[in-house]
Each structure stands twice: as structure tokens, then as C-alpha cells.
Image (cartoon, rainbow, N blue to C red; front, side, top):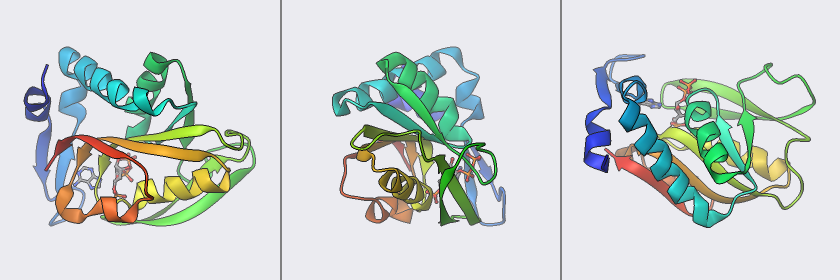
Length: 173
Ligand SMILES: O=P(O)(O)OC[C@H]1O[C@H](OP(=O)(O)OP(=O)(O)O)[C@H](O)[C@@H]1O
Ligand SMILES: Nc1ncnc2[nH]cnc12
């Protein structure tokens, strides 16, 4: 399946979760067998040249895409989670969302110094979430080597918020 076909499987929901937000709903892509497979294949093909030791996926939609990508590449998966979900000692950062504010955490012992890390998430809007994940990786002394998204909302300029690493998205709006 090509990118245009994948894009056609993403559903637009106006005014969710707040008035004025046009929500790009990936659940309709996830439940299409060929759409899901093609999306994972394209993400994995984008991540592979970056030669990661770990894929970092951001709760919750980042888990859906990050784990099968790690499986396909034969590398590990590390979850970045919302507060108070991870049981062992964590690094924590606060960040702004397109529609709110939140915190993210990573286990302190998940990554070793110098490990090559690629962040995978479903969508980049303002880039605040990915920036927070990048800060967590820095605290854990990992080496961020790229960020890969299914969807990029270009008008929100998220790339400008991220560190100087390769940033790729499959679909742009
Ligand atoms: O670039 P940003 O402006 O930071 O926005 C992008 C983030 O927002 C969404 O996650 P959300 O926090 O809604 O959580 P969810 O994955 O659990 O739905 C999305 O999955 C990204 O992680
Ligand atoms: N417009 C949007 N659609 C889906 N997920 C999002 N996360 C942040 N902004 C979003």
C-alpha cells in the first residue's frame, strides 16, 4: 500500500478533544490489515538506516507503532510513559501539548550511556511531546539519532522544537 492509500485510511474528527482541534484519528488505519502492515514496514524502513539499539515509544499511541518497529528491526523497545505508571526509579520532564500540559517519565536504567535511540510516535503536532522524550533520553545519557512519525502536522512547526537529528514523517498535513 502506498502513502496516499495509507493517508486515505486516517479519519478526521473536528473539535476533538476540544473545539478548534482537527483530530487525525489513526484507529481507522490500525483496523485495516494491509494499512497497518504497510505503515509498520515503512516506519521500520525509515528507522533501519539509523541503526538504533532501542526504539523509544511515547504513551500511548507511540506504543502501537514503536513496538512492532523494534520487533522488525531486532532492537529493544523502551516506553516513555505518563506520570506514575513506571514502577522503578524514573527521570521526569514536563511538557506542553496542542491541547494541554502533561509530564513524561522513563526508567532511569532503561538506556545505557551512548545507546543509539530512535523516537517513534504516531503524530508530531507542536513537537512538545517528542522534545520532552528527547530530554528524557538526554537525562538517561542515550544518543538520540532520529525521530520518526506516522503523521506530521506541518503548520504547527514541530520540527523547530526538536534537536538537530534526522526527523522523518510518512504523512504530512
Ligand atoms: O507534538 P505534540 O503537540 O506534543 O503532540 C503530539 C502528541 O500528542 C498525542 O499524544 P497524546 O498526549 O494525546 O496521548 P495519547 O497517545 O495517549 O493519545 C500524539 O500521540 C503525540 O504523542
Ligand atoms: N490534531 C491532532 N490529531 C491527533 N492527535 C494529536 N495529538 C496532538 N494533536 C493531534
